[in-house]
Length: 431
Image (cartoon, rainbow, N blue to C red; front, side, top):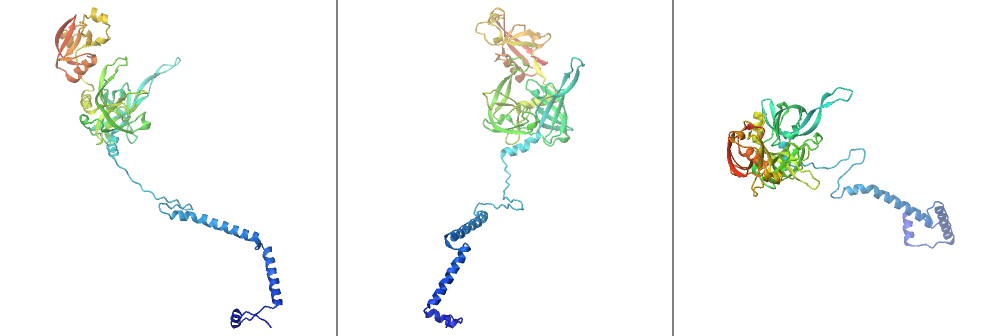
């Protein structure tokens, strides 16, 4: 009789009422269990080795799933961006913000009026066996500022030393086009020059500011072409370091200071090639013409610019006459401090207390000085009541304070005696 029934009713009965197993049934169940165990061992599913292997496979599969899911999980975190590294292009969320400051606004207003100037000079070439021939080559470059359009001409202010010795002048415009330029006028004493070009490609002219109202510490911007046209339109910023500075300059290269240039001092970087470029304020107005810097290894941030208020009358005179018409006395001069003390006493016969002044070394015929009775070896110590100690003092009074046709009163020592003279100034290129 079987103890197993297939119907549900009998199954429930067996679950509730256990029926004792016969010895035969228990033996059959043991044999069946032993056979199943042997089969599992053959397949690797039994024993400690089988369980270890199954667990290892599970760990590896789980790690792979975590690795594959990790980028997606990271991108769901706050502050992360989504990047698609598949076939589609990478998408980056980027915000483009245009920054505008007082400096950028001033540069936008003024920079298009700044141009490059190339100085082309004539050179002689040829060897021992070939006759000499003249050719032209680029001798240097600088900067300039377009300040006026009149008819079909545009006028540009620059430094005299930028155009000095040029056989030809070429202007490079902000858009890269080049224009031949003509020299209008130049002045060695103020280091200023005016040139002109055709106005057809000129888009912007500079607006003159007022350099007299600049304040020490005020922000200024230098625009020009340092080290040549490769750095065209470079912008540097700084402050007005000082006003009413006087910088001695040697105009003829003889090692002697001939003049004191009245300049603005700034720490905005001004390098070779910046000469003639613009110094502008935060309103984008032209307040100076960049001119020079002190170039020494121990010096930093000493740049100089000609104040625009000093430059304007020079510009107007150069436009009108091509040169500065200045008053002249008609003499040659030397500083008393350059005369040996022996000659001061024996030739000039000066009193011991007279240690400074200007010695007249020569008087031109038919000049204002000769007509007024000025003589060789007179020592000028006063002009119009102002003490004169050096030739620079004399030039500054003559060029800055006097005009052609003005009367000039001199006090001179002549053979140890003080003499007063009066003369009428005329036009000339010498003192």
